[in-house]
Image (cartoon, rainbow, N blue to C red; front, side, top):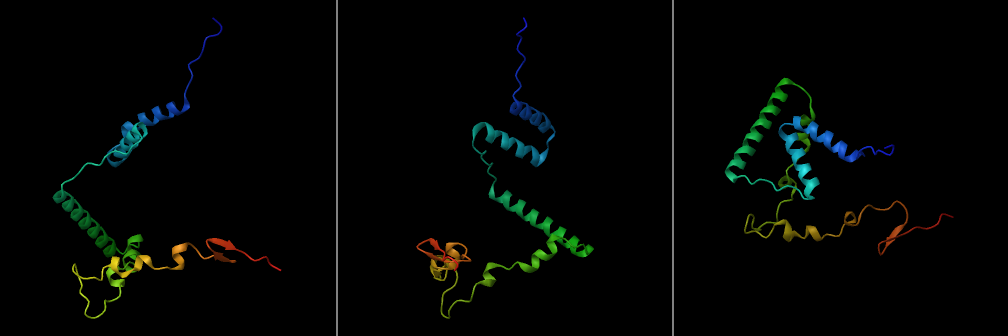
Length: 149
């Protein structure tokens, strides 16, 4: 008959199918990321991460640090300027920035000079309440602005 219906194409489904077909060529991290995103799309939850024994994880991290160190050494020796070269000079460790403790204070695990006991988290600073306004002043959380005359 003259009223034959054409198959209706769902654009989103078509895009998903094309992407799925293209994903068959993914390898390594790209394939894992795609698989995780598909799982999340279908279930609405993120995939659980596989647990790795601590000894293996420590070894993996040590190897990664060695690789990174070797790469930085090669970059330094070759004289190439990269984003790594300026990074090491500006960063400081947190312990170096902390002021020295008062004389007679006990350091370490048994000491009472831990950051949780210093009261740093309870200090009332202007940064605690957001940026300072350029005009007017805050009263009970409300910005009061005077009209220009």
